[in-house]
Image (cartoon, rainbow, N blue to C red; front, side, top):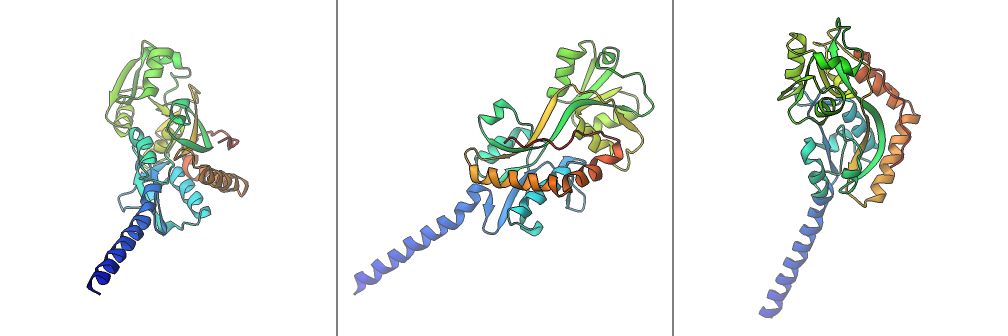
Length: 273
């Protein structure tokens, strides 16, 4: 009788262990019970920004909210995770997030590691200049100018290496520092994706101070990154994106987040993912 009790207890322990393992498996796929982990940027105004009061705002954030709702997750069921550019692939592969919406350009290199739904937005590398500066109308004009971008930026190096080799490249720690330099005339232009530049220019404290040069120095197709091989999730996200465009939400969000900068966006792209 004593042996049976021990066996029963052992069996119960095994069942509990298996149950715990099953419950924990959700975190490996970016979800936790009835919640979902979504990666966004925390430091890009107009796209993905964590505000001082702890809320999240921006075009990418609203796209993520829309997609999550279509997947069955209300706002309060979302766990927002900061997704630095260098960590995005690892976060997806490790299951830290279900998907990432964070100025995530679809490239051949990245497609070897993760899958993408979309694209949901097309932008181009551009320049941000002072609103009253008409001396920069083409990229070659930068050869006699001071160009700012963040340290390690591929955008800045693209200009320096291929387009304006005589530009005086200033690499600072963050885009905010570049904006301060641009306003104070310490630099003449800031370069990165036009959508990111438009987000900064649209902030209340910056409105009217800057303008985009309107140059298309590269094509960037933003997609929603997810674990490689998850065809079911990819299909559901693509359906959500198609609905977001067809019901007018996409246009509404673009005007809301980029309109104040005067940014002329491309039309909603055809989903190919």
